[in-house]
Length: 418
Image (cartoon, rainbow, N blue to C red; front, side, top):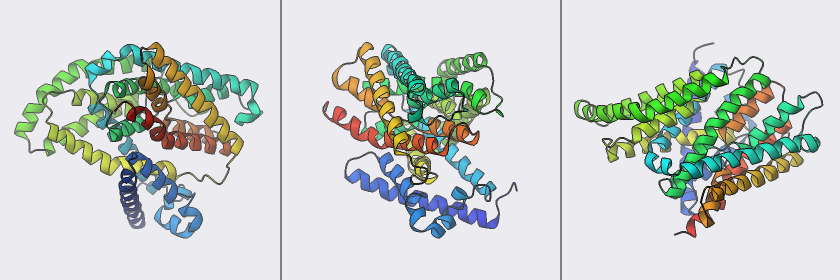
């Protein structure tokens, strides 16, 4: 234990190669039909995973991805794969942060706060009520704490997937538009609140978790964010000309960018919030620099979005078997409740925030995108015996359905504005 064996290294390299090659083929295919690349990468994960490939040829699947079905037997390999996927998410959020135009986000403050408030309160409230009045439809076990379970379901329905939304908006070319910045600002606030709520839920769900106090977490992230977006941003802006002059290009800037990205991610992970939030904040500070060359920015984006991001999106379907433990009642309950409450809440918030027509509905469709947080929370809850395998599968299917349908439901409102 503690070191990859000769066979583990081979398996790791083959798995990464298969994921990258097939995700690229799928990306090119979906581009031809004018769909976001992320959709092809997610579908490849489902095809390569136990649902399709694993069912057709279990032996071949196990030989290429031995860490999926037997994580305990391939402990070190499984950890290595988890780490590369974590790095992928962190770098993807760093790139997304680089694309944020901070003045434009600040300009959208009123709308973003309104969208955040209603896109969380409505799903949490309806999800909480559904558990109390329709418990049989949401798979609650008799011995489960009903209050905590109701709150858990509400959080699952309310969270928005910042990395997935960022990738979809980039693919559609609206990331830097006003509505794009409003969506990103709202998703950023929802993501931060989601991880704060997540840290509280962990104290009830995972008895082995030693979480830091909520006051400590909120104070620390506010100080970190304020520092990075003011003093930190100015320091980066002053350092970049020196780095670009004294160091080889683009190696020097790449090392500085990713080094700061990982430091920011490590800090937020340390204080009790997921590492992606730290990477995102550092990305905003780094990308806001007037001294960052456009060519350097482009190299960083291509490096991350074409090499690391596909690994994350493929992995979503790689670990899930949609046939085993499939419960149509649970799946439909999550999808119906999730879609209606999240879209409805976001649209209400957007309208109250001053958005109208297609912009209002664009926000609603985009905010109805779920992702890593729900799957992570579901995994911890499953391992702690808090939820059943059927509930976990329903959550994952709900998440993947929201990702797959995000671009098609958003596209008509975007195209109608062009």
